Picture 1 (cartoon, rainbow, N blue to C red):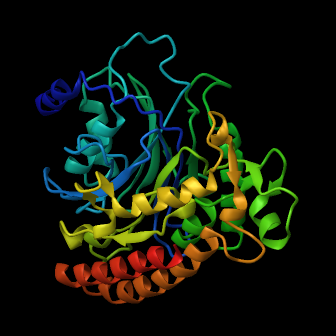
Picture 2: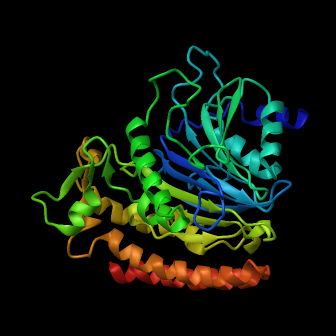
Length: 401
């Protein structure tokens, strides 16, 4: 308890202040197409400049998604550690009603501590039990471990409730920005959750619930459940009269800053080979890249913070292209997506070009993983692969510009 009190003391006056209306999911091994559990976070935030960072400041080393402005890495918004424990979150806006606690927005601090100290769901539950209350939390933590654990934890200032993906009839659990344990019919993200429920059910029906589907179809979903329309299909197969659609209720919209998918391991595989698939920028304009804690401090250069630009280079590339997709500059412009910049009937949209490259990255990575899952590689071998990926992705953005 005293260690957690010390952490709380250091951060108790740090108010992060980010609004994070994310779309998230925990997928059990039994429901994924390759028998590996996964967690997914489509991150929405006002902090649009993101990077990944390797940390070695706890019991376990870990890779975390952080704001580029967070130079000391005090808040982690999703990641995985050397024990194969991984965690993400989404904010909940229908808990702590009437609670006057001033301490809040501690989710990034707590996830950092969990990655430093936890190897299993049981470790996280112990941490939640022992962590001082009020927590300063209003969130859902999605977690997987190497023992097959896969669950969401709805957490308010005083209590937590577990939702186990392994016992859920669907084999997965989805959360946006309201809790099942919170105040009924309050919170945010009801329309996004409808969209997520549909695309997850469709993918599971055809045994396509895997990291590739999540990257290319879930984080780049243009389905609107109220209208029952998939704008991607419409714009890829025809030429509607307008180039613009209202994107506010899409899973990915103007506030979407990044995405992280963590793909777990099977029995007998090294926990350090848990795979992180990171889109460090706006998912519609950002190529996904893989990472492993076993690679050590040298994660892909394009995902790291660079002091010369005060950001990660891949995030910068993605934001440049995003600005072309949201060209309306007045105060309400963020509602309106020029979707033809992303997908069109000519096949020249940014999404279409990015996904062509990603399919090659998937093939290259799966070839490596076929060997590495049988025999854990030297860290340098992973770093050589990172260099190859950096070159390919960097050249892609320069060529496409």
